[in-house]
Length: 241
Image (cartoon, rainbow, N blue to C red; front, side, top):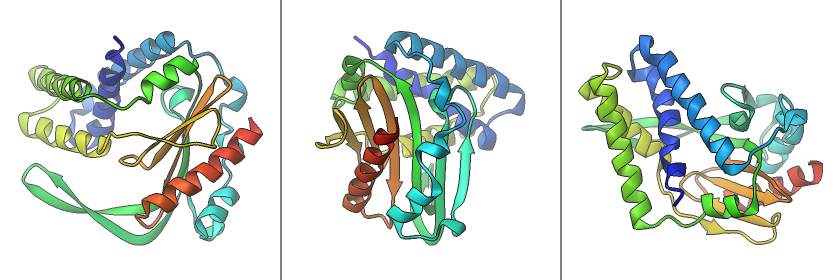
């Protein structure tokens, strides 16, 4: 049916990987693939313009809101406003370095990587309720199998055209799967018309009156606290929309 929605993730994952393990000469090609994937996704979901919020995500989620919910000092927050690609993929993130780390497997290596305390808003777009429900449904075994096959096929394609070496392809694939992590979903009541928590992404996807957005909260590795605080922030953001 709409299995394309999973495959559309792949060019974006590859673009994120390209800075560290891809050929510089191929980055424009990857960006073109991402842009094309976005056009397809927007057309399929009926996404329209939300121009009045472009460049203003930091008004919907302020550093003061993030600091209050985390208990950290607003002046110590590291702010990152990403406005690459299309507005649908813009994000405002506030992070605090509290010295936390986690282990990540990349090929045969186990790497200790830093984990920042995070509060982020992204994915602001117009969408139908039906499409929101579909995109945030619990994935089936077939969905996961199709995603894995599509990821492998895309990596093989990049090796064939010289974008990545075999070793780089393996590393990019491991990193991509690590980034996606646990893809399970949990419905959350009392936030908007519909809300779905993805524990593997520390993200709460929210829908109300044709609008969707994602709040990501990762605090001290405490999943329940992160989910609860994401819900509080989502309600505050909905009150501004």
